[in-house]
Image (cartoon, rainbow, N blue to C red; front, top):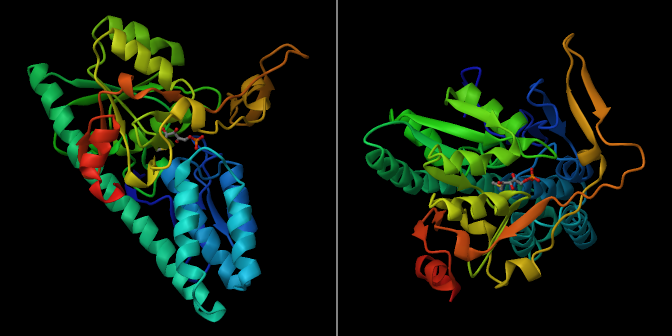
Amino acid sequence: MLVDGVAHRTIWLAPDGRDVEIIDQTRLPHDFVILRLETVEAAAHAIRSMQVRGAPLIGAAAGYGMALAMRAGPSDGGLQGAYDLLMATRPTAVNLRWALDDMQRLLAPLAPDARADAAYARAAEICDEDVAINRGIGGHGLDLIRAAQDRNNGATVNILTHCNAGWLATVDWGTATAPIYLAHEAGIPVHVWVDETRPRNQGASLTAWELGHHGVPHTVIADNTGGHLMQHGMVDLCFTGTDRTTATGDVCNKIGTYLKALAAHDNDVPFYVCLPSPTIDWTLDDGVAQIPIEQRDGAEVSEMTGRTADGRIETVTITPDGSPVANYAFDVTPARLVSGLVTERGIADASHEGLRALFPEQE
Ligand code: MRU
């Protein structure tokens, strides 16, 4: 999508055709910085430190991480070492495992000297597939926005979103934002309520930044505001992303998503989850019990980083010295609270039957 009028993806090959370039998302919204990754260790660091983040982009970055590893050492040991290193970076987004398994299945049977070229080609394909999947999600989600506009007699459609499931969380388009960008391009009046999404502020820092650059009307709200807005008829639709969805439709997403789904349910606001198929974990049937929830450094809760009036980026502490802090990064919204799963193949009921009807090959 657009940054200062120029179309960008979040990850691409450097001009030498070997290194990989990314947008350093830890520097947004204040600085737009491109980082060059030359090794699998740099790719693992980028995922762990959230220079790249968001389930689909984590998968794409892992694909290119494998390619960088194969360039340096394509032996069987090099392949397994790269797989293990990347797999250990973040536990919740299932796209990481999906991409690594995909790469390993492709590369393991090949002779070592054929692995690097094959890995680069497949990593590029994973990126292109992600773009196509999100564009597909966008088309189906657009139907929901059009229907909401009809219900509103043509007035602006207000959409609430949580975290960043925008193009920055994917290779392009985003999952939850793809329908919004398409609606905006089609001239449908949309306005996005952007949850700030503590503690890492992906909404305030990333979603607001990308919507702003693309010209989509939006308002940043404190995380606790959504229920109030819904009670007062100020939200027509909720669209979120997901980091892992079970075969039964339980949705794991950024911490706080569950509370938004509860508020939506209580206020009859449709709550849709935009779900690319690589984010479905077909091996699980109980999200609350089975999905590993990442716990991150407490400093993400006890500290805040921002820009001072004179332009410096500073980090300050906001909790009393000595207060313990917990930092659960994700939660699970049970399928019963989800109005539908917007996939690239259509909108599924959030259930085993609904997902299998769209993905019969998983039977
Ligand atoms: O911890 P992050 O920033 O990697 O969070 C993941 C996400 O971006 C969100 O949970 C998102 O809504 C799902 S990924 C499209």
